[in-house]
Image (cartoon, rainbow, N blue to C red):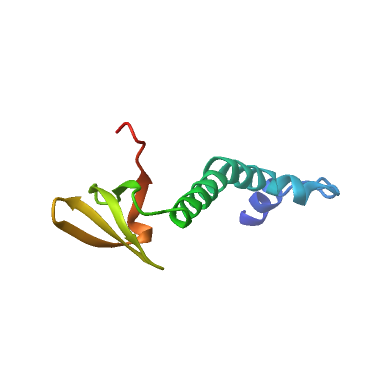
Length: 106
């Protein structure tokens, strides 16, 4: 009884064809392409923009940190910056923790 069911569910001989293997991977390839253009590529672009922004920091820039602290850069070192967040209050941050440079009108 079970052998009859197995034969009944098997595809006919030669029905796979030459492109059958490629067509079965087409949905996976399509999903990867969609993920690349919607997720991976924009993330790489944002990371590149953030890196160039970090490299161009200079004294006097008004910044916002990832923690939400607003301040003005007092000193720029290799991997850190000293930020003035209030009168007589200076804090040292890692450069990677700077989220954005504020515009002059903020």
